[in-house]
Length: 90
Image 1: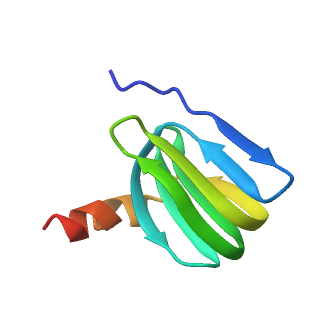
Image 2 (image 1 turned 180 degrees about the horizontal axis):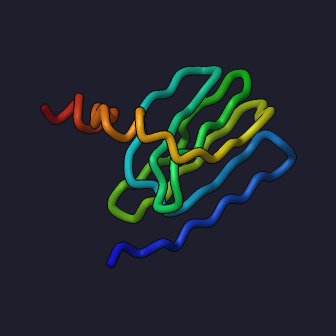
């Protein structure tokens, strides 16, 4: 059974740390879309940068002006199967 551990921490709306990351669907300076152990996480903001990423451990750090975080169970995104790492290592 898949480990469902997932944590999310935001400090001063400019530093986000999360665990339980399985894949990155897309990212740019305004939006980061992740697949986590508890669903799809969308981070919206301005000047977003991925500062630390370790898919083996499932840890991610995003910095920038964070305005919102939203979880969803979007099957459309999951069914595409075109995460960032799947494109890079194709």
